[in-house]
Image (cartoon, rainbow, N blue to C red; front, top):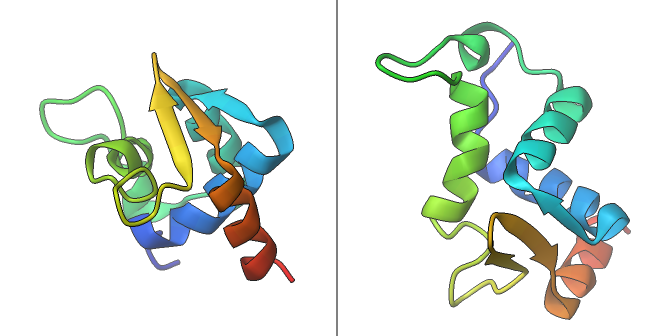
Length: 97
C-alpha cells in the first residue's frame, strides 16, 4: 500500500476535530491511525526516534503549519491540543459534501 502523505492527513484530521472539537496530539495520532490504518513504511520506526513515520507525519501537521498556518487557520494549536476553528468547520463541509 502507498504511504500516507502529510497532505492526505489534513481532511481526516479536520473531520476528527469537527467530531471532537479538540484533541491532543496523542489522541489525534491514535484516531487517525484507526481511521487510516497505515501499513508498510508508515509503520517503520524512525532512526534515532521513538515514533514511526506515520506518527511523525501527524506531528508535522503542527510543525509544518499544514492547517495552523497563516493561510489556512483551520485549527488553533494551544498547550498540546488542536481545536478546530469556524473556518476549519466551513472547509471540512466543503470537503465532505
